[in-house]
Length: 240
Image (cartoon, rainbow, N blue to C red; front, side, top):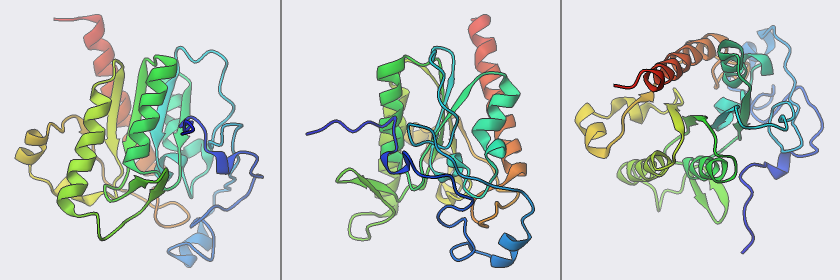
């Protein structure tokens, strides 16, 4: 069995730069009027690893790794307004964008483990995806009715979440605003499942495709991330 390299997105490597991508196009967007009236320029370019990011620096010892799905890629947004870019600007430290369109939480967890195994990172920021997605036969799929259900979705999410807690690094957890099932779970269920300290946030605006979030939401979630990172830094400097 060949090893899957989770620090690459093969289908995006050598992909030419484009001003549209997937549902961020006039034919596939959720609101054509919104798409036409969107005033900001957008281009999609990918580095040699297939991520929508600049090339990684040679020294990766002090970067922040940002892992997630298309909300992390920043579909429908200018690259400089994606949350990894805003986080980099606010915290003054290189933030690598490891977002992948359609990424399941299974793949996100595997990507986190790969980063920890190869690079001993200081900080990883995760934006978890839809619970119903799964990684099946080395591919991410959105939904399989015969296998998935609300209970199984929750168990699968908990499995992936807990597997990241076992890593010896600082991991900031957040979840996409479209995952409404997380917000609806009672607090006692979250406590029972061991789910805690996950940043959840409302969607304040829409990107050009009218599905993903735009700059106002990116600003909100990065403010919350910076606050959590600073709190952790302060605790490490002044231990009880």
